[in-house]
Length: 254
Image 1 (cartoon, rainbow, N blue to C red):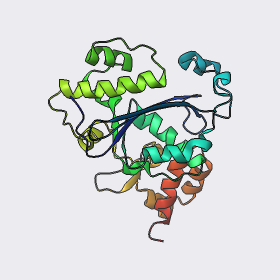
Image 2: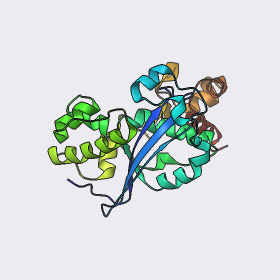
Image 3: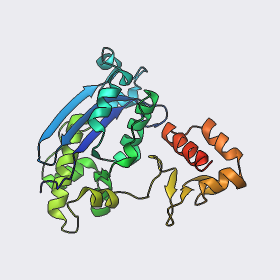
Image 4: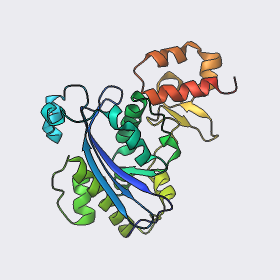
């Protein structure tokens, strides 16, 4: 089943130096941009992370320091890449929890203020786990009846993710072929920041989703309960996007 699109959607995948959103860097990015008329635009690029790639990460994706030594840094490609993503819905595999937050960190470090949170996010892994509880390779085997070759290659994983979503729509009649529906279905929380540290409660109020103030209004904590909590978060190991969100909340209605 082909996707029913109202605007372009980008399927993308990252290979990185590690899994720490705040500290690790992108070394490979692949995307497939699908337009409402079915036209596809596909591209892969390697990126110099400006740090050494740990051996344990190279063992997974097989990309070495030498492979990216002469590649552009993320800052050098950030403006053009932002133009690719702007105005598009976004899809990936485990993208809501990792790829999108890390991509936003890279944009913010490069000084690019792109508002990805306005787009619809479709996480194919979440749909898969809700339906079948498997991995991407198993998902490809299950839905597409094929073996995923070159797993952990950004391009192969990106293509597989796109094909799996189309096959999921064919398989499950209760999955509506609509990006907004798929975005809602593949989300666990109504996130305010991309990492899900701050979420909307049932009343649409921004509340903490971690720690001792979990479920408590962010403004309530910052203004009355514990004003120093804001400074603690700003000085802590939180994603730049999270810090931007809590600053926006703190300054609202001032």
